[in-house]
Image (cartoon, rainbow, N blue to C red; front, side, top):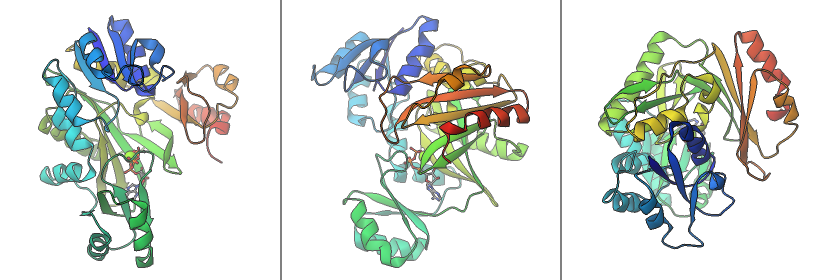
Length: 363
Ligand SMILES: Nc1ncnc2c1ncn2[C@@H]1O[C@H](COP(=O)(O)OP(=O)(O)OP(=O)(O)O)[C@@H](O)[C@H]1O
Ligand SMILES: [Mg+2]
């Protein structure tokens, strides 16, 4: 099939790389001819063609997107002509923290207490209700912790509200978590579901740096609970494609943080670490192909993000169990340039391999 992707970043790039072996073709709408996915298909650039989305739709049999910040109005318009997966309802829900949490509450999925905030006065009331510490976040558009303010003291309220630039926001209770986990799953057009195992994520300066897959020492009940949350979310939204749920593991069980209606950075390990990657499964789902097996290929996997600078990538290339994935991006502070996947047969092998790659991780 001809697959059109709204966006041409590294997620679009990896989706296309996984889809060519299934005989699919790709087109992208993007910002520039040097976007990470630009050389992997037909590239429709807005700057050169104001009707670039129409051109993409003319090219494609099915449309998907690589960001939750995709315009719902555009998706609605496209959907009158050709299918868009995930559907408009899933995008509308997951791109707004308030709508997302309303759905969690409706489905009895635990999440942090929250209150929507549209003014400094709203924030004062919300702080009284929720208590401190609490995190103020923009309701939409956030990524890598951008658009967030951690409030410790009442005296920070004015500064916190100012930093939101007047946009709709949400105040969330600060969750005292033991670790951060995520769950990725895929649902097909035929309602088949496949789940990857829970993975453990470590952030530094609000940017994901390391994923361990599967997460170690996970109680069977915790895994089942996370899967149950995922299943009811997939079914409620009539979701087609790969969905990610970010979770906090706390003393009192799992608390859901947010969802992403797409392949996710914490699933990049699955390229070498699972029988079918999150990317290939997304492509299979949206094209109506049978979903692939999600079982890990090794008992221990890890993914290290390459952030800001490439560093000495030859170290990676010399390791038999490390796999380099670069996104064709130039170096810039805090930019995701690529990632390294590690596969291992024992915890010691995993730890030794991560130690060899310590230059790619924060001190
Ligand atoms: N309520 C909370 N309590 C404690 N920590 C939190 C809370 N909300 C967010 N965080 C921390 O901030 C990080 C980023 O928050 P969140 O995932 O909501 O934002 P984001 O900008 O969408 O990030 P990303 O794009 O990396 O997923 C989380 O991974 C977690 O470490
Ligand atoms: Mg997040």
